[in-house]
Length: 401
Image 1 (cartoon, rainbow, N blue to C red):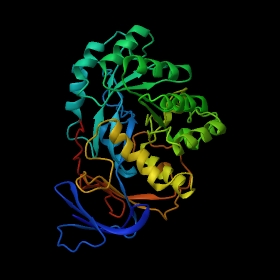
Image 2: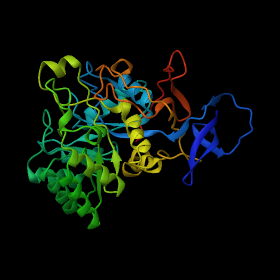
Image 3: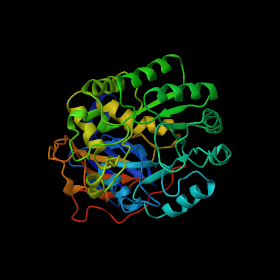
């Protein structure tokens, strides 16, 4: 396959480049590639970016598939330029045993449009022996230190220590003072910690101080905590999630953390519920994976961040942190995970274009500053906006571990 007429950032400069793909890898990137190819994609002046890696999604599969499943969730990824997602363990059953993890892996085969990986969950019943057994079969251990369902809220300090010591990397849901506790546990166990969806100025400062001490700490923020705040929360409970939306001051602190390198990644915490569930009673969680890239492109156009920074926090860093080989960069030898974006598109985001089962987005009515036109996973086109049938029936996604 050959991609022509696309704009690529090369050494800080945007220039037209051709990209040759062979055996699912990027074989060549050059000003002009003159070769007869089986398939040629005309990028029509669109920007070519590496595929986004979303390190934090809840695809609700198994057990909650009326909200989302692997097929619909991966379609939302493909339409949003996300070529790899990492799925959380608070499903039904919770992914806290080797058997549950293996079942989840088997069930996913042949059902995803994009590549994927799995977290294993820590349990309040101390499953540290299971954690040790499967640590090379999962991208990380997820520990809920503030809130969760089933047996996944872990509060006992000894059990937390056991889980940290048994893990290669621990991702935590920690808020407020629990962020400090997670950093303390990480330092004591000498196990790196990945702090999910940080939302406050104080939490960002904790991470900044920990990194200054040389600790292996990674910080994630979500688009909704960057673009939304308490002023947006209405009486319909749609914009309720954990952690909750905070203040404008907190928004600014998160952006500052991105710019100065305190924040490492953008994770969506894609946690879909149907509109009926959200409006009938207080239900925490919102969808996010389909529009994460397009929302972050607003920050590029608004000059909050550079395109280089966007690629770093949405593509390169997740690959490095979670040990995902050959992904995250537009470079020769890497997987041909590629997104073509029309940066001139300023259409409004609407609920009608949502492909997630939940059928709605918190960004409904907002203007985008760039639209995903095509998504390739390992050189395979899985989404093409310019086709009548936009999704190519090509569920070629495979596990990254």
